[in-house]
Length: 207
Length: 328
Image (tube, rainbow over the protein chains, first blue to last red):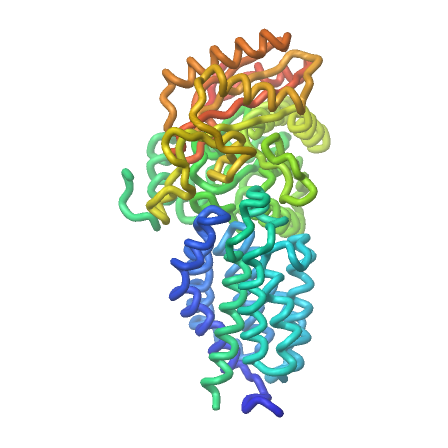
């Protein structure tokens, strides 16, 4: 079976990123709430600021190549978000974009491969491993599932984010809580899952 | 809260700082605070930065004898690489720039990226990581010890070394030596409230305190029923000494977290001095006040820095910043 959408062009990537920006805006309070349980209560506000800058930069750019659009979004996140999530999300999108290169259109498989390179770069930068209760716990299963379908990737990301609840954080600010981080869903894994919800939404709206 | 809207808290503070301190160049738009006479010819420059909410750290420590520039981020959020690169470019005399970085994941990642970008622009950059908080006992399965009170000692002493004309590798080595010889422990009597959230970032029932708290309200070692100033001093000093075991004299910072009155802080300082005397630790220099704060958190931290003759000389050297000033 194939998705309806097999060829992903610049319009698709613009739709993905603006859908992601809306999702982050909508869910910002929830992300902040999760972050106040095991972090410092700013994840929602920071990502909202970053993705607002992404939307603005996309509006002001005539780039059409998927790779260029993702790289542009990544640079915005690095320049605007701060904290750990700025460099981490920025690196995810920038590396994914760079890996896609100049192609005007890419396939879902190519996107999955490029995202894998992006996730690898995030893991290297943050020094985290799967199971450390970080964004990787949503990103890795999502990218693994993406070759199957957009929906599978979305569901895997959600499941991965939920699966962080019983984990003890070993990276980032939540790690200072030790055992007290158990029982809370990781905010970074939750926002990572939003990216894949947005991706499935962007694909679904393209029929 | 004495604010307009949460979104402009940092910019509003920077505008006020600019108006109060004409000896600093405050770029409100780009969020960089630079000493007005930068770059200082033939001197190494020091750049630090971090989330806002810890004032006077870091912007209040910009000036002769300490930092060349500071980059304030959003409240409790690391600044972005663009700020640090801009700051480095503004202060580099050609002798290089030392980044003073508190050990938090966000600060480390953003300063790492900034160092790469600055080096691309031909600026020689060295970094020193401050990680003095003994409350974090498990460094293997956490992000490692946090940077807290020792940041002040690193910035003051390395700043004095830079001011004296030491080359970059020497300034970096001194900064590292200060950090390696410093340990801190903080105690919270109440949680802090970020402007964005508007309610306390963690729950600390009145009548309880958090021992080993971080400067963003991160939890520490344990929560206990309220203790006296005397008991808290015993706990904090012993926690620090367990890790530092100084053979030489120390510098002592008794730091208020933001909402603890100086009346209480001085009383606490007396208790800290008592424990240090009981443990035969010689205090060569003292600072009591609100220097590395955590918004409106009530509580205090104790930092000890073991010094030698050279470090003491650099500590005593003249400094003129909004937050720390002597000898000039």
